[in-house]
Image (cartoon, rainbow, N blue to C red; front, side, top):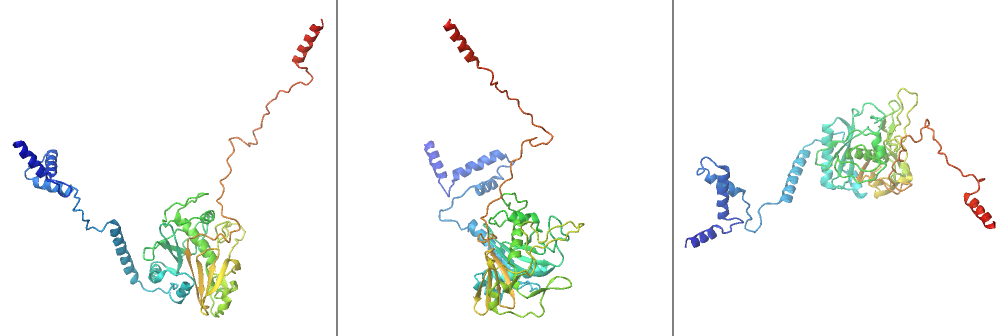
Length: 424
């Protein structure tokens, strides 16, 4: 009878309740008390029971959980961050040094096939004003967007009042060359923009030896051969500088060179041309100097103590190559567009009075303008063995024993002796 009562009692205590049972709970409580050996076990019994109950997994009723899930929580957190960033941008005051990205020229870009949407356009405008307020800049403009495999780069170009690189060296140029502008990048227009490091000539040269998509991570390595001595932020700066030097356009006659300072200034008495004149390369000019990809510089480096004059390869306000561009009217009788064939995604639009430039692409030049197909640089030749080719070391000829043609073979002598014996 007692055995039957014990079995019934244990069966009652072992009933499943949300993945556990009272029998298992009491067993774990007693086991924990025996392991911990508290001084007053009776006093802490209820506390131990609550601790064990809280640490026990509960499968629930099977009707689902009321939690949102990790994906929903991540999306909610991203929405809160976006709302906070947008609220911060909303209160930024307009800066006079910012080149406008919205308005009529933005409409012309849309007709030319370039549009980031009204929301992003507004956020970009506010981001330009925020960067202008945080930096001591002469001018601030939206360079464009380079798309990556995991994240994109929104790029802001800043012309600082004080040069970032004070003096040009063999490793990098100063404000008169490739480091004239400072570039700020962010994965979205509402995020914080980060300044890219100064550009090195070696990074420009190395960037021409490979074609690859960016990842969106500034600290990511750049694989390939020859090895790229830097990270993606250095590679990104090199790509931006090459694009800007080849695709930054202005209207012919809009700028002129100051006779005293030799700087580029806006023409005081500029007369807007007919729109038809902008449908040809002669109606445009390159605004800034371009990079010499062989040296990675705008101006070749020469020894300051020497007498040689540095040479500038692609000067400011130079003519366009007709084969590198396509021209058409984006809006009939109101807007003209110029698209680069060398860098797909580079677009310039103008209404005849002002113009704007923007780049939206992958940062990869077109193959159409390449005389040869892209091919990675071959590795160097294998080094010679130690001591090979040493002029002080003389090679010793190995003596080779030569046979004497005058000496008759021994086999023939033996045959002759055999014939004489037979005759006897």
